[in-house]
Image (cartoon, rainbow, N blue to C red; front, side):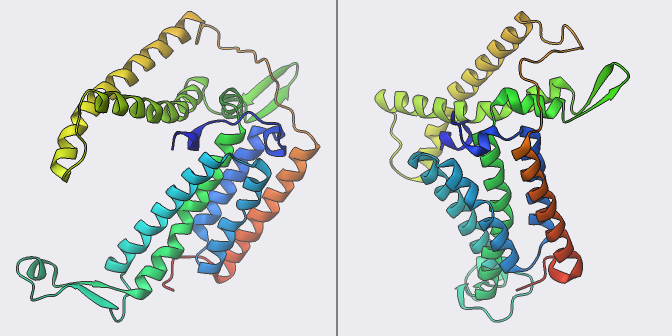
Length: 287
């Protein structure tokens, strides 16, 4: 799971793209995942992100983690909508009968709807599409480049001075640090879990035993995260963070030929999706 958010050091076509272009692509895909409404377009939108994974060629561990997360999302959406679908017609079968003691009286019966399950499966592609695009961005963009893209998203020249339009550097640093902490937190939790099991912590059994054991894992995990955050703050202050408002950068962001091609693809792809949404293929109508 920790490999989901890690940057992969490679020299692929996606790695060579300008991070600002990839941010625009992520924004366009996310917008389309919201405005498009027909099931087939949602599936096609998700499929449109898959060729970039073939270009990246991620390791097997990352593929397994992506499949696990995607499957969990689809299963949770499908099951929840199968039970609580608003436009449901005839139930496929009954889970809790209205005559069942207590629960039946409180819920007036719990039913499984086939059309609700189908609706939930299609709607899960909204979330999975944005997640797939976001993981591609993180896997192909170094954290320092991501900070530069947030801070200097757009530059204009007035006279002899360049002015950058983007997020404040502090906010960009905070966002990049939060993303970097995710794999570290997962790795730290695994280390703590192994250490606790080596000391005799029993995790097998019912849900109450597992909940009781969680406090032995969460407390050291939170303490270690706070320590890592303090070390990061001390390191930033030591290196003069926020000492000078006019920052300089080792790597300057410049759009190249491939960036313009990918930018044109993003613009046409997003415009086409918005047009389809405008002419009647948008919304969240029932399937």
